[in-house]
Length: 113
Image (cartoon, rainbow, N blue to C red; front, side):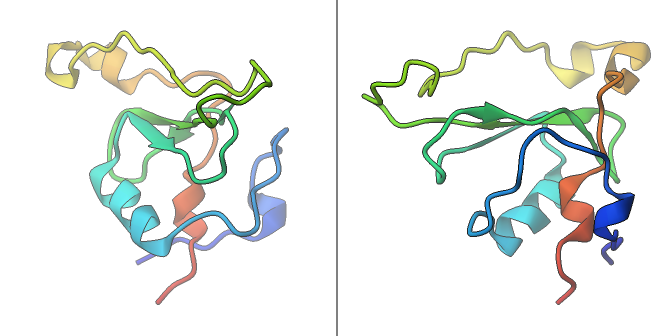
């Protein structure tokens, strides 16, 4: 079951989705697994989307696109460091915390098979 949204129902964003990017298989996995961090490198540019709510989990997910190694534009990072705490070591309020700029899950409107 996928929840479908019209473009008008989606929250405003500063980034435009890449028209050729994405995979329905990866979208289904991301929805099922609800990772805290989702990394991708297929578009070869660094970008961080606002955290998004998961339909089936208390915590949010942060999507980070990684750039190419050796890119002359230093803003296109190819590495990203994280300092993570395991979910089971977090108290309930930490797990359920949602930043003010949190968005809807981008995969909730992936095309239905």
